[in-house]
Image (cartoon, rainbow, N blue to C red; front, side, top):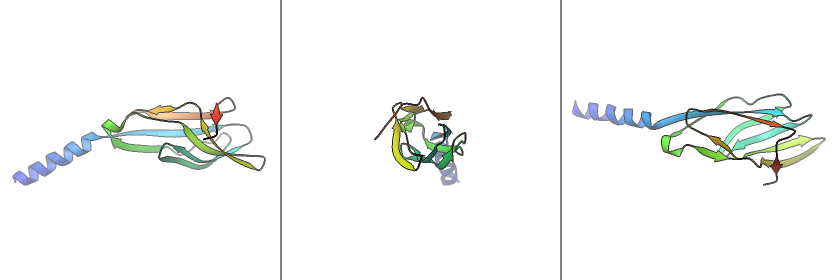
Length: 112
């Protein structure tokens, strides 16, 4: 009986240490497609056209692993050209947060 109680207590501690957050990205850049969108090690979406958003990506990590701070990396495809870019700004994802990133014509980017 003691082993079962200890096991349940241990499982409860493990679950309570886990926190979640979510990320979505919206493409507001005129006449282009964003592909292979990532935030750090997390792949957010494969391909979105103008005015589309990625599906919500839920990040589940230990509480001590938050906040996470990374630029957004993606390929942009316009007029038949494909270029890899990343945002100059680093976005911060905190535990319990729903981070919504909008990439538009004024978003500052650079080549990684």
